[in-house]
Image (cartoon, rainbow, N blue to C red; front, side, top):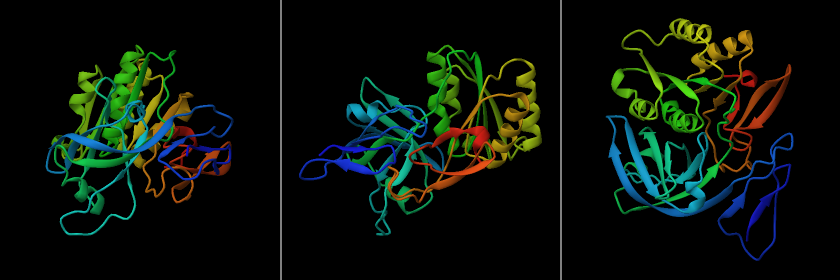
Length: 299
């Protein structure tokens, strides 16, 4: 049975049983954006360590998964780790890359809890149950000439596909990448390969503080190289960009990181508050997001 959502997010459908296909319905304000969502077993084609914390996972999937856009995410049904615990819920994982010709989807993740320790056990040829693509991704305005992406930690993976999309749209990117130390700047090569100008900042080198980042951003604004902000992975750096966006009247988008359960807007466990015109509005990160207007977020 195919499942559709109405404007309120409630499910409605016909048929004798529930299969694994569904569609996102209209967004708040009548936005007609839609995407097919499928749960399917995906074969692992590549799985390697990037450093002592992060791993790169590539799976072969169907055409729906391969249509994923930058900023969207998948829900992964992780296998049990060697310690034997069974991950009860799927784990949300942002898109790191997609090869539409080969129908492959890539993820970059940090090994941290039960779910990701289970993912770590996957080998080439194994199957991983994935559901997606989910959520609302990044949006690029063709009128923009240059945008700035600021990310830290796992947010570097979320922002990475944006560079290629911007390049294809003829938009330049300056990527300010933050981490504890240089070897954790996990998507630097990806940004550079897609033509982005990379500014690396680290705790180890004492260059990642908000004051220093603000000086960099003000310089880019003064040079006319910041038509919009994109950010993920650091609340303190997001607040710097938010303040500058309001000061200079610049648009911005933030990919919110949030624990989730269903991933399709039903359980409401990922609700965050937003300031919309002075009014506090609650929104589901998995459904109305994970990408939101930076100026409305409460990071």
